[in-house]
Image (tube, rainbow, N blue to C red; front, side):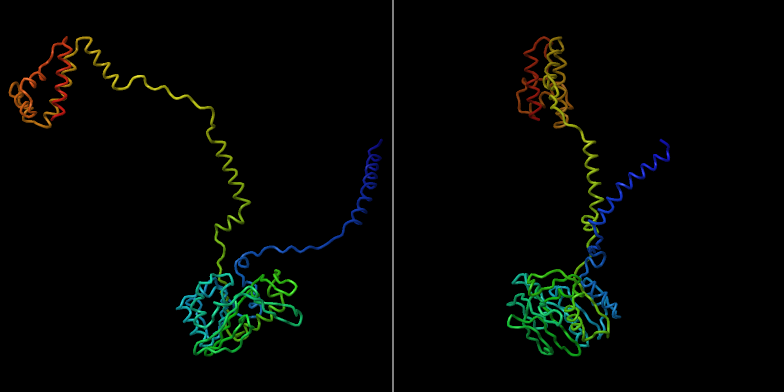
Length: 391
């Protein structure tokens, strides 16, 4: 068979198999488009007001975001707007007084009450106290919010309702609520405005949208919801387009260590496993228990006794006596140098007087015994040790 005929045969087999398979694939499959929503990245991952800030900037407003309220850095102007998503409990009294003074000059402040699951005995903070807001006996209840394209809409489900009793100098301009308490109130102080809401979830990037068909709520992009855009636009109306909008979102970006732990695990987990494997490879292997090492068969005392018996056996008893006598005289020189400087009978009398012993007993102890008299050797050594201990 020629090469040309062989390749024609191979091509025919491929066509006979490939064409039916292609027809079956095209008839049993269809092309679809699937949109995958990725988790937020960068500032959008920790700033719940990021979408609102982008929308305001697109509308031509000067907008700044901050995790905490910082009046010296912000330098608020009378026409500015401050949206305080940060818990008002964290606002100290000096900042509260400064904010109220700024509102009186024409500022617009928006704040919310605490979450419904806070401690019943917890304080509501100096800012709400200064406005006469009371949340002690109220709970979180949804409020129907009917709009033309969404008649079954509800809002303020995740907040704590409140009552209002404004102090002198602050008056209620508009309020919204029912017998369960207020969900919104607009206060007038001087030339400025203060809006108090029970909930600001609709301002966040992915708030919960509560409807009559879905009382528990479902996740939706807040500002893509027409009802949320209308409500947000109404709340920002007093100073809209006049000054700077400050968005205080009340949270901080994740730390470096949290990013490494939660997002960098594809790197550090294999490295950790490699390190553990290397340590296991380099570790000392544990086998059977080794026998205890042989202990010395003689102690130091046994060696000393054996050395003394050796000297005694070979007639070297005076050496043993001389060693004990030198030890006694060395202590005598330290404790009684005068007696140690004497010699002969004078020294014996001095030692006997010092120890209050009989003269003959001290004299016997200081005499060298005969080399073969073992009993005399032991008696003199015993006396020398007693005399040494008494010094």
